[in-house]
Image (cartoon, rainbow, N blue to C red; front, side, top):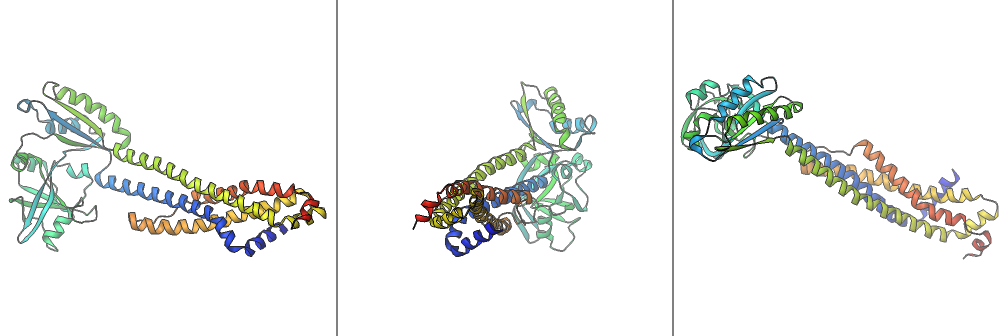
Length: 393
């Protein structure tokens, strides 16, 4: 307790110098906590984005060398997944879109996205029906000019009116609204809610093409992704002759995984930089403690001359170093929490706080840094000879 009291008294006497000593620790701890919180926020943001898109999707892309000999991949893929992979696949739909103006009476949206989908489009892309019905197989077979609207399009064109059964014009062509989807991406212009879905069998009328080249297969869970991709590989190899075209399968979860891994790697690098700041702070503590030893040489000499043991001298200076670094850690934690909250709200519109284990670890590391870098000055103080110390000015 005596060492603690003397350490606190020394810090109070030289407040400015003590704060500058703690500055490196403050910066290091703050940086660590803010970086951890921002990485957490980024990962949450990325995960939310891919969940909106729909996870566990296999993307199929077909390239035809000879379009005159192309086959109806969509129908074949749909039937195969429905019959052979129904226990693992939730839906199949083309992944084809175009940008068209949408008009209802006097209201026009200049460039919303129109998707050509199957009756399983909503399941493949994580849309939930709010009112009316979805595109169905009858619409596709009969090439019915019907559509389901995203929440932004429905709200913008119809305001508070019921859009079901009304006629909208997509690229100048009339379509009957049969359903609307719940908002899933903020309901703003350019979002995933700024869209409409029409039967993919209208590809010739809308896209002036007779064949589709991109498809989405929705898998029920991530554990089945590899099995489904293996089965699709065999199926497509049998369906598409290598002399006519080629195909490519892509794991839709790969992009999310890659983004998470990239951010994790970056966080390690940035964490290393923050760790360097902590080490610099430790060096600052060591320098100031050496100065303190010089300033208190006479005091040390008096203590040693009256029989103070070497351990007491070492303990006195180690306690002071630990308090300095600990106080720096506490201030760094407070700043880290404050900046994490501000930056999280500004960058991701999330309330972010550093993980409690990381916070405890950062504080513990800051104290350890102070003790480690305080050892040399403390040992130097304990090695002073009483006679030499008493002669010091």
